[in-house]
Structure formats: structure tokens, C-alpha cells
Amino acid sequence: MIRCYLSILMGRDKLKIADVVRETGLNRSTISALYKETAVKVDLEAVSKLCKLFECEISDLFEYVEDGGD
Picture (cartoon, rainbow, N blue to C red):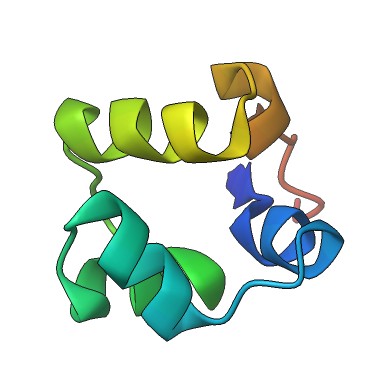
């Protein structure tokens, strides 16, 4: 499973979804899906814009976590 830490980065910088949409030019549904961790796929351009906005590495935004199921 891939964890997305967009909500944590947004909280750190006190940004709302609308702020991220305005700053990155990305679609609101893309940001919402990443924020809620319901995204199925992510465009590399979106990842690039988010990393630029938050001045972070990809590993600060996403993390691979082993599934806990059997």
C-alpha cells in the first residue's frame, strides 16, 4: 500500500485544498483524492508540482507500507 502524506504537509504549512489547487494549478479532485488517500493513480506532473510547492522529496510525500492483511 502507498501512503500519501499530503494532508500532513498541508497541515504543516496551514494550507487548505483550495490553496494547493491555486498554487499548483492541479485539479481539485486530484488534490482531494490524494488528501483523503483514495487516489488510484497519480500523474508525475502532479507529484512534481506538489514536491515543488512543499519543497520536499517524493519520499516526504509518499511511502510504501506493507499491507497488514494475511
